[in-house]
Image 1: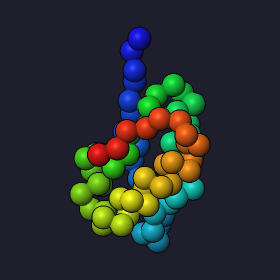
Image 2: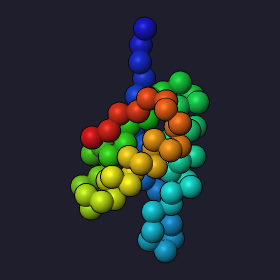
Image 3: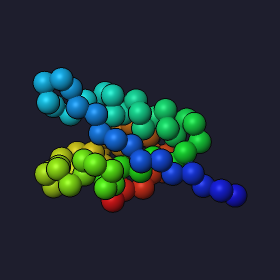
Image 4: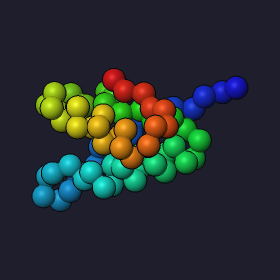
Length: 73
């Protein structure tokens, strides 16, 4: 069986804050499509986050997916 994994980009609001609702929705859409979400990956933003923000991304992913699998960098 092939397992598909897709990097989830972290969206930001126009004001510059993290768009947590948009991020959660993207995680859920990706999982619903049969792909495993990948967060905190080197896809153009992870190196710009503070360690605390990286933890927040993990927490938000867990909450959005409700126990479904994901991978993280």
